[in-house]
Image 1 (cartoon, rainbow, N blue to C red):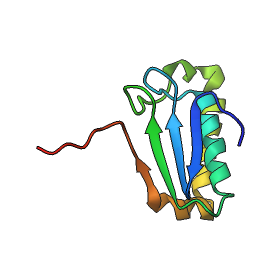
Image 2 (cartoon, rainbow, N blue to C red):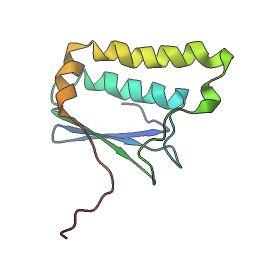
Image 3 (cartoon, one colour):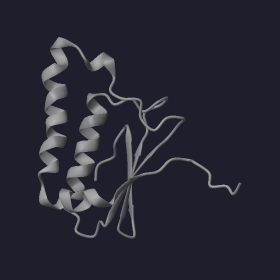
Length: 112
C-alpha cells in the first residue's frame, strides 16, 4: 500500500491498524478521506484481515470534517469521497469486516 500523509496503516497477524494522524485533532479533509478510502479499499482485497482497529495520534480521536473543505467549489469533491466510502460499504468483503471494527485510544486501564 502506498505511503499516506494523514493515515498510518499496518497489518499484524490479521489485524489492520489504521491510525488517524492529522494533528492536532484529526479533522478529516478531502485528502484524508481519500487516503482512508484507499486503505479501506485495500482491505477488501486482503483475505487475511480479520479485524480493523481505528486509532488516533494526538489528543483527539477525530473532531469531524474540516470546514475549510465546505466551499461551493469543493462540494462535488467532498461528496464523491463520502460516496466512495458509502459504495465501499456495499462491497461483500468490507461487510464481512464491519462486525469486527473497533476504536482504540490511548486510554489506560486502572483498577479502582
